[in-house]
Image (cartoon, rainbow, N blue to C red; front, side, top):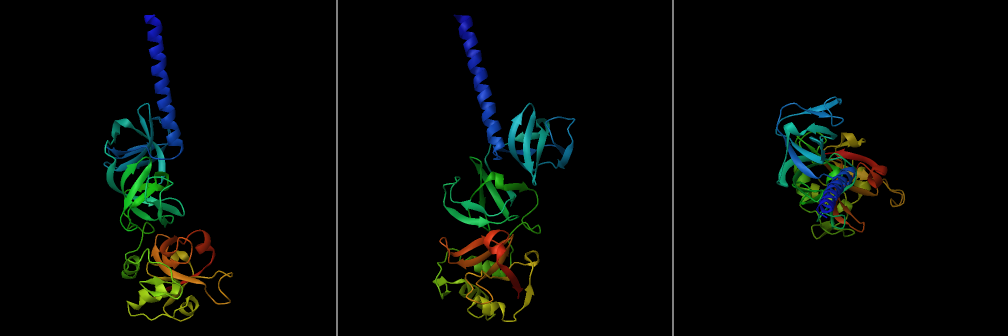
Length: 301
């Protein structure tokens, strides 16, 4: 009986270990981060496989914060700066704390920021590819963020931790005074014909914001685009934070030159007053979908 009991215990232990390994593997396959670690050696080699003979992808500096996707046999599967691979546990330490502060960059288009670490959480914002954020913690595979885009949560597989600051070109929202002023009206309701903090339509919002900087704009998207103001920009890549942006949906333009307007904020994002179901003053992704399809151009004032 004792031998049988001993064998039974061993089987149970092995089964438990196997289940734990499988659970970690599944979690890693989802691309979600399971923990945070820190490099303890300089020029730490990130390899394509968990082997000293595997090709080197890149090197990591000492004291970098690294996302951990899995662990096995003295190696960690990690991701940083948009690259993933394996590092030896000899020069890497898993952190017990789940609260930290590090830079991140959105690695997908149209990523939702939610009020809770769940796909059921309320959508607070929507970020474009390359948007720079400040990551403040990890909870159940979701990063908590704070700063320019507000507080909330993003699935960790949609964010690449990076040692590059959000000020890096293409990494984040601009800091122009126009953008800073416009940002304070996030959440203001949409009102057709509105041009005040009690409610804006699209051109009413841009008109109001620029009025505070001594610039007079017509109260129509077409009128603003055809006003001759500033310098026209026809490529999204040439836009600068604070530039006016214009769109033309043939189904909504009533024969006019433009059907919608907003303000470019950087990171592939615009701030605008939308008449959509989740409307009012919101951020939207300029680099994909509706706004990319109907982009006409921008005006650099």
